[in-house]
Length: 181
Figure 1 (spheres, rainbow, N blue to C red):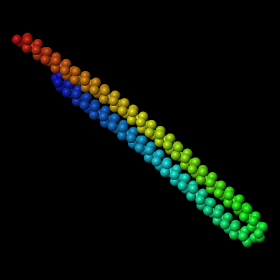
Figure 2 (cartoon, rainbow, N blue to C red):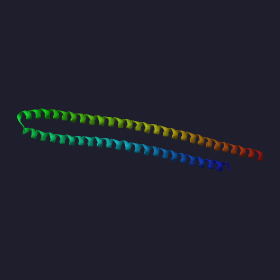
Figure 3 (tube, one colour):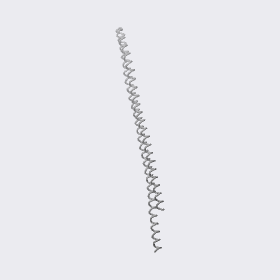
Figure 4 (spheres, one colour):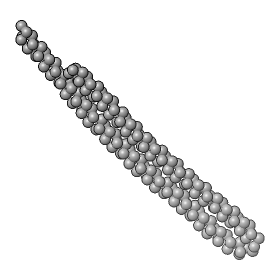
């Protein structure tokens, strides 16, 4: 009867170990899926930021090309005017050209600054994600170690109970033999 009880207790212990292992495995898989989704979202945000920056530069180039074409037309029109008008128009167009060049340089600087800021934000997000992964891993590792220690202690207690039951049975048989003798 003692062996049956201990065998039953041992089976319950084995089931508890299996259940705890499966639960911890599920928690780890869930944490990995969550972090993978966050990583994918970060990658998508990087791609979107690059696409927005490229689209902004393309639009700025189109606007500047249209402005250049208008300037060329104005030059052609001014060429038909008198020398004084041409000189005045050239000065005006040179000033407009310089302003256009300055606008191009400013647009490039703004785009570069925007990309740099986006990269900094994404790097900070990446670092926070890495920290979250490390923290989740450490927490799960601690839970697993705690569960193992608890099950080991329970196993040791079961082993001790088995040994004590065997000792009691041996002592009882010895006493019975002595009495019968």
